[in-house]
Length: 439
Image (cartoon, rainbow, N blue to C red; front, side, top):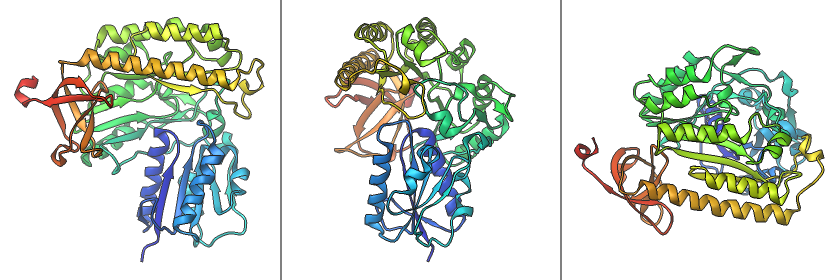
């Protein structure tokens, strides 16, 4: 009988794409992938260092795995494994810890799955991690996350990602196009481009060799993919050329996610962000002038050291006045080995929490206003396979989340619909319309 392997992913879309690629390696090596909540011979846990309580979450997932299979071989990979390998090695039940460079050679590192007295750690210094390893997720959802870039050369004072993933590096355009063609052949309708700093795409062997806009143009010609979505892109790297191309492209959708982090220029400078708020506002205005129905998502950090109430209100008002669609709100938390952790002016936890609540409420207000503007319009929705309370969900090109009574025939189909009303649960209710009326 084949040995069974199960996976658990913490963190970002990039981690999901990498877990999926590691899973394909196991399959090729003769392992049988099984769901995480079932007995397995080996569990691979892909960790994150960006969100809070990395250690706590890692311990909890290890404990869960051992509940299903008390003698299973436990391997930890990912950002947290790069930053704190010895800490993870101390977690009861962990057999192996693989750093950033080693995780893609996991098959070579695994022995006969004999449990260890002491966890084995393979973890090279991060500055030795300079290979770009391709990855994409497939088989687990209607859309695929395609990794186009890894690492980051920016030095934001709050961030550990350069320490966990190394310098910025990318694949070749032709290799990424070939992967997109493979994904298209599998029947997936939507690709989400992902990376650590995707606008910085194009660095190989330490030198800039391509531009992100050239990758976008090349992917727009890939037959068989209906939609391509850009995940998060820095405002200083989202050029007018990219915005203009997306507005007229065949496959790229009018949805942008741009980290702002603060709407106050003094705090942006303390964070070492590479733009001022005026540039951010220009980008939003440019997108909306060319694509009035575009969806714009915004990342914001509250409670950064030195952020006064006035600074926060400045950020709040700045976001409130902009034509954006939703927020991802992060409460600042201290990270070891970052400059921000040494800064004076720590904001009390209760104030961080209050500011977070205010922005979550603002996000709901912005999302609702965005959805209300879409009512009565016609859009094309790609339906997911989930079912909840008799409903299934899907997303329009501009990221309007809709619901409709579950119908298995709609799964992974793109259907023209009319946006009718906003449901109590916050999604948009729709009417299907004949294809002929959609054009």
